[in-house]
Length: 165
Image 1 (cartoon, rainbow, N blue to C red):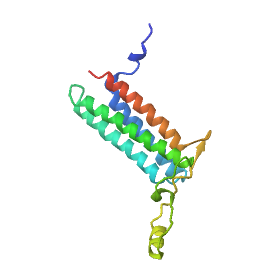
Image 2 (image 1 turned 90 degrees about the horizontal axis):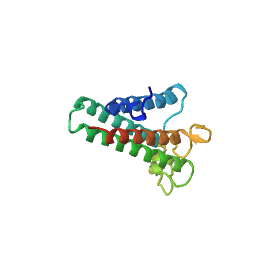
Image 3 (image 1 turned 180 degrees about the horizontal axis):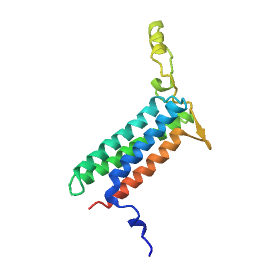
Image 4 (image 1 turned 180 degrees about the vertical axis):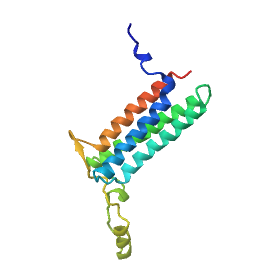
């Protein structure tokens, strides 16, 4: 007996899987941060926010139950959260690759400041710059891998969204 591809994952489980994968992604980020000392930059933290949004929306979809007319909307919003996370990650990759310049708050640019402003900028400067990859594997930074994961999760979520009854 062969199973069709569509029966391998039940689309009704989409919120459970998106919550689990989002939590797993956050755990990997925390492991990198606390286990390996890779401090996150401002854009890294923004990418984590997309996973938190996906978790909150996933929990909402689970609580609403499979018969709720709003569940499908919540699942669509989960997919959008992943797309936003992918956009932030891909923007971050561009900053790391110097394809474009990041915001001053992210790259620590301090031009044309008065003495007091310069002191304030130094005291409030981010510890980790967004334009320097903290870690790369096979030439892809953590932001690059996060962008790929976010795109894959968005595709999965929209697959589940399309198959909700």
